[in-house]
Image 1 (cartoon, rainbow, N blue to C red):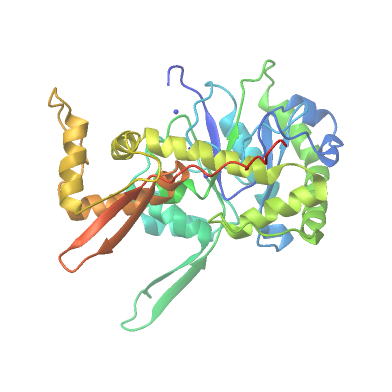
Image 2 (tube, helix red, strand yellow):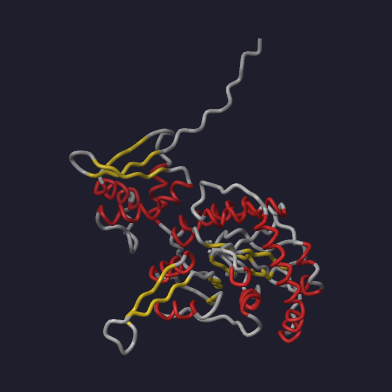
Length: 375
């Protein structure tokens, strides 16, 4: 769902799946009963989607020695060591839902083929992503939250073919490049470590097939338990349904899922900022503003100011994709608005009689508790 450089590492990423941080979540007793597989296949997550449970939420637990090797959709492109078993882990997640015939796929070259692949199963796993185009990113957002594709039916003049879809995605890759903010809010990561002991695939999959019914049944039991729990819905998170599921998990099992989800979003905001020079420049400028200060200018004036700040005294050349007009700058800031707000910078738009403007606000620190008189 996150995502970040020295040594190449691996990340197994999943769209709208719930996980837990490597240091926070203890392995569920139900999954621990899966036996020797849980100890051998450490740090490989086990995914339960809405398909078999008929529920709108998606749950994820991890199979490891003592804890779940994932952060609640922390960084989609967080670096991890090569050879950590991302493809094997992805197959395990897929086969928990799709059966032992499920497998990973290469990313389709266009949206139509991607929609066809998504509609053909409950979970679609795309393997070894190394680049995320804007069109692919937008298509993934639509797939996870739900959309409809309407096309003219073949060999007809006026008939249409409609395909509705709403599915979780699972993505694997060492470095998928820059993550767009709207996709980052829909992602959860599984962080895998290199296994210390290697095994043959024949041995691993034989034990996996034997343990699969136990793990699936345990996850279905967890789904029922979590959905029966009563919990308040967090109102400050965009993915409110998923946040409510995390709160239900906390109420039922005490997993700390909601706190891990928030931590994951925070990590993803770092990913977005690290991959966007405009966001870095805006935050650099905001760092010089006084707490509670507001600055309002036209978009063209902001573009001139930010361009001069980025270029500096050395007249550094502008990077590819840098806004060229005030309108482009305004549109880029709208995409970055949630990310900048998470870092304490409020971006707003308005207009006066003369022109439209963009306003940056550095919130004032919250007042501390007042201390009464000692005597």
